[in-house]
Image 1 (cartoon, rainbow, N blue to C red):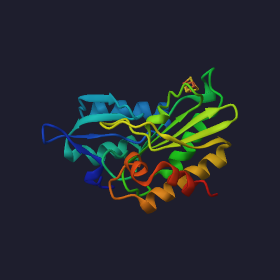
Image 2: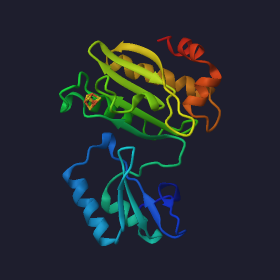
Image 3: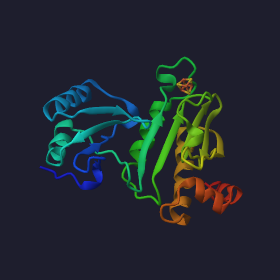
Image 4: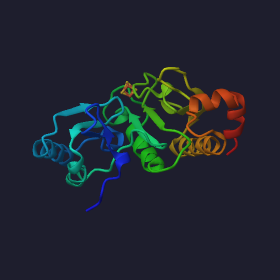
Length: 220
Ligand code: SF4
């Protein structure tokens, strides 16, 4: 049986039990997920299940000795809450179901999650993908944001919704899926190379300079 490393569980205020946030790519839950979640909640007497702001379910109040069993029976990868890596890709329904959608946000969000999951980064990273300019994926306050327009994707970088909020800067427009992903890769390459440890994209782009950053990532 895999032993769940401590970094995949968060100690709670009672100093005894833990919370976990299994990874749910693009926030899409399928029947087998729901059945597995219901089963572990019942079996391990998990008292709280909370939908988080980042498309995740927090299962709260798990005994330490149950953690590995819960993950194993869920069959879901551990999500991240404190590590310096991708935390989540927040995705709106896009053209899949929303009548306002002009771009396939779910498709691109799932692609980005697969691409970025597991990478070591200077700080935690949150991504928001919106299928139109209503921006339900909160793209302008995420480290990397994508907003769909009829002419293509707009890519923004350096947003933050925390205690020093910042609106992300536009670094590319009118891009197809492949070009948008390539630009995200260039943004991350620059950030990984030049940011300080634990420096979020918002603080990095303020220190480095927006125009310098645009020049750096504008080269294909
Ligand atoms: S951003 Fe646009 S496409 Fe996405 S859910 Fe909102 S209205 Fe629909």
